[in-house]
Image 1 (cartoon, rainbow, N blue to C red):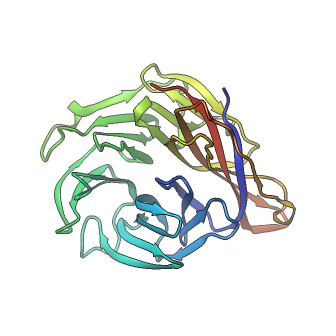
Image 2 (tube, one colour):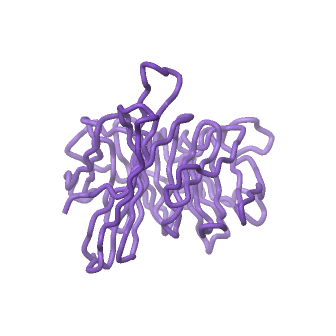
Length: 315
């Protein structure tokens, strides 16, 4: 069964760099050049948190409609923890990811909690992989994956990482990786039918499925074990900027995405539909972001955040 678009909303503003669906499924966080935006169930007006550097990665700590916490990885290699409660937000802390004395480090490419959430596993754009102690704010261990990272996804179990390197998709097993180890022993190249894999990417660890941008601008869904294309999500043009994926278990399931449209902002509309999934025990979400610039207003970028849904069987 194909993916169905069940919700959409138009957003005009600064470029979007990353997306993350909340664990509760009702919130959508977008990292942008000027900070963070969080939409509550696709309401027209997001919560906006302005930050000094662009947000390159988002990791949820907890989420409810009026009470959420998350960590933002920034373009300069630092982290900031944000908390929202009853209409107000505050910063819980900020620290540099690599060197506390440095003004800027490589971009944060991926984040994941591990060790009962006592540690933060972080991949940086230069290929370095660090494990931080959140209690001591010190590096517990570090290594280098010997590859520049364009995009990366760490599995929910923190036992593997899939990264988009220049001209290749590579995965690493992290379960037994340690300080001073030979990372080549943990590396596996992913052979896909289409050699030119474009950014962005999103990895569904439970099913060994990879979402990427295709040559036509549509979203390609790959079986990583077989290296074959198994599905596509079609949309109407624009440049794909970000993807996120998520499993859900509700009978009626909403999936968020984002794409570019060619209609002017004032003519756009928001649509919301429900898809009945009473016979489905599991669903998957895919988030996309596209960009387009209007000739009449060349300095204003327009985005469509879209939610796609598809029924899937138990594995």
